[in-house]
Image (cartoon, rainbow over all chains, first blue to last red):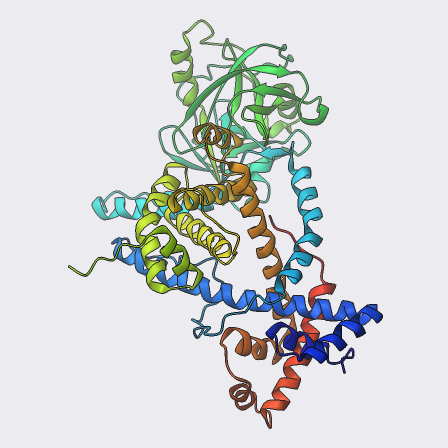
Length: 368
Length: 198
């Protein structure tokens, strides 16, 4: 007789097809009468279906992992990391000889899946139209980079490149706001940073520290710690605190990869994400790593700083008004006074010339 | 030279359904390098490629156990398309690759029925979410239930072996214990909220 304390046993026998016809009849009759028992039985069945599937998957994954290791070894590639991240079991389980027979299990699975379909659809819906920060998660490309660097070291071990060893856990872009070591980038890039390095266009690294942040505008001002740091040339651009007009052509350079990348587009809305009045909406290609990159108008004046983009479109990007940056600079304490450049030195130059002088002042921000 | 066996798509699928090591090795040989190349061109790395490929094979495995499953295209096409979808899903959640890439990709493979692949993938992700939850519940069970259930279901030990391993007086006792563990697992599983990390 089935009761609440032995549903597990009954569920197992039911699944294995071990029940006698009269037992089966009795089971159906009892379950129909007792809804509590019915639910307990159904759940017991589901758990057993799941745990068997879990066993099969574990077994499969360990086989797949083995095959991956072998394949990798045969391809003559160095094996540094265990490729079987998805196989959570470390030990190789004994072969599962007995395969689960799909008797009546289909019902269990169907019930299981229908329960969760709703949550899943809802979840994806809410993901539409999301704002995506453009800091770059370097973790995923770190391994391959490390390998390249270690290869490089083997060939030219005499040249020391100490800070490059770890390219940082996050990356963004930044640019100089004056001549002697003040830079700006996004707040979300340097948020929770242990240490920050700026990599200049010539490849040199400089340690920097945060001296002021404005989370609302998503801006941070950084200062290079090396006191002797300064640019040889004066800044070619000014920071324009006037709000640029709709339709203004713009361009930007930043570091979505280790090389500087140029993009151009236009201002497509005077308001940013979700009606944010501190930001513009731009139509320009932006990729992770471009957070903190300057947005410049045709004359090469900085009118904004890229912060993020909308994730379901290709080019809708958001940039905070440069005015916010100017305000932050004005609010700096006296010992950190930054005199802004007020002369644009390259407004009449053709674009490649502009970019050439600009790129020296744009840096990659590495955050550890 | 070792003897070369050439499998048909059907044989490969059947072998995968049986978790045949030989066939799995062959599938890696045939299709994995292609994916690695593609992934690297998309800003992924080799380890990512192996992860994605493994997951793609799991999807195929699930499908291969489905009697209604009938491949309407080449195995390589199916596998590659599924792997692409997996990678997009992954990179979307990590925001590594912009949606721009996805759209371009969509145009490239216009003729492929993406909705169908997505449906397969979603079924898989749902299943994985369930299994993840089950695994969490198993962890929460603690000793000796966790070990006992694993010994029975995963290591495929007999009740007698389990009775000896866990020092129960006999197989019948061990069995009672197993049912108790299943009961606790059931309660844990259905009381914890589903954490969907899709």
